[in-house]
Image 1 (cartoon, rainbow, N blue to C red):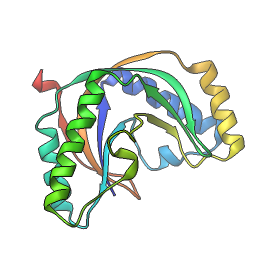
Image 2: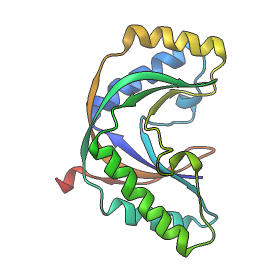
Image 3: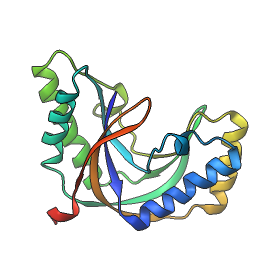
Image 4: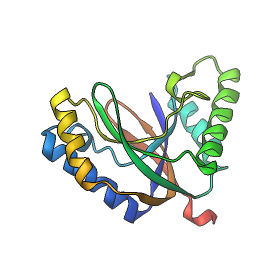
Length: 181
């Protein structure tokens, strides 16, 4: 599985990483930390056997992406095992999602060796930053208790886009968006 994800400015990243660290500490579950998974929002996920095809799709997507702003406003969960913070789906994120999907579908129509993850297709995508994953019910409750005390609105800037491979997480390449302002 390959992920196309956006990454944040240093200040936002520090706050989100602090939340991830706090969730790991209170739950004893360090899945995200042990995997070196940085704070991010995945905007596209797909499978292919050819890494060169994944890089081609990423290069085409990244070429059209500019920096943007996000407001992370809510803490939530994907039952039964994930805690996250979620942004307002603003015009920047919607446009970003649409452009990634357009590129994936264009490539999908040309290549038989690509499968788009169902959760990242149009009208199925739910933007979020995972803070903890593979949590038990008790761990999820502890994580929520911690986030109730810690969380406040985060206004951040998207400054990079990257391509990663999962299981285990491996960042393959990143493109800085700051130079495109």
